[in-house]
Image 1: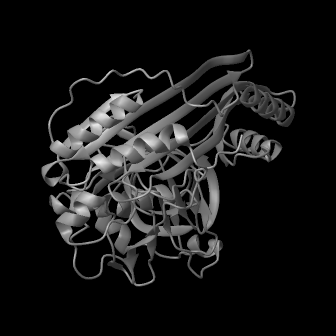
Image 2: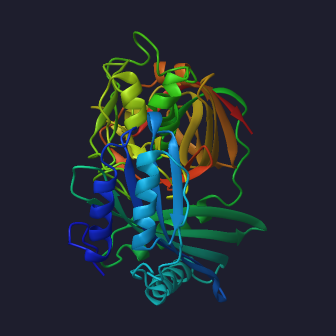
Image 3: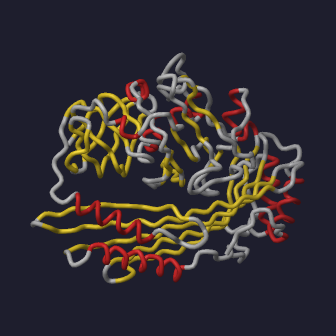
Length: 449
């Protein structure tokens, strides 16, 4: 089913428009935020479906009062609840008299049977690619549809739809009394699912190559990132460090930096309108726009919500997001990427006597105040004399923001997005984000095997 964020919706628009009028005169840039969300997760394997979860959420949040510090929320609100919350926001007085439970359930747009069929096709393709060898397979479908409405005084009700679909395939193969494992993912659109055979073949072939993977070398080594994969590093290096509220509380080792922080050819951008789960407007009703974070090797912009923008004398950038109506808005990344360069991908390997080539990372963590970062690499190859060598067992990379950015080089032209897919966790709030990067190289980085 196609979702239309611009179609009139009398059930939601009329009560919200009436409530927006009640917000007039309220302090703290008052607003109401209505969310309806559907999530579907299914895992299947050799024995069929192993686990399935299909959930719905509907709720209303309000914010206003002095400095916008008054916040309240109501689950499953009725039109009466919307009006009561609007009055509370306008006055800054705690809620009384709400009667949550309107019985309005979000319209189901995700079809579990269709998802199961996709997983069955993916598993069939994987078995076919593996042939007669011993192998086990796990396939996952993760999808969400989120509709939001934002009401502010003196404006029309603004609406947006965010969608996300992805599949993940894990393969383990046994050969020569050894085991090889690999993982692959695809971000999907809302139309016909394509490319399952290609995904299955790629993951099975990589699992076979990884049979008997070596232990990673320890110590300081140069690292080359495959296209797309290095976007996780960019997300951690530059994205979190320039979320404006983090910078304002002096918790960013990079955000307040003056002068060069990277070579002049480095350009880093965040554009929420791109990637696997884009948004046209944020959770405060602000239009999303691209922000150049690093230009010419210098910090060029910050990611703002309304609060951080007001405190900084800047304009909101459309990056105010929350993981649900129950959580506060924060400046958050949308789709963070390193702009492509002019090098050929092979040039990133040239001159590397001994290093690692990272194909996949599963997790990352950063202390923005110190700039220290840890990345968990789950698929990589040894680089020996400028060529890819043996596959490596999982290992950790540790580095600092300044060291990594200052040594970023050999940026290729093969920009790719979402080869490693996950959620960004900040202040306990998960959010679907996208990352992108071409092939590139950074200088000496500590490998912990």
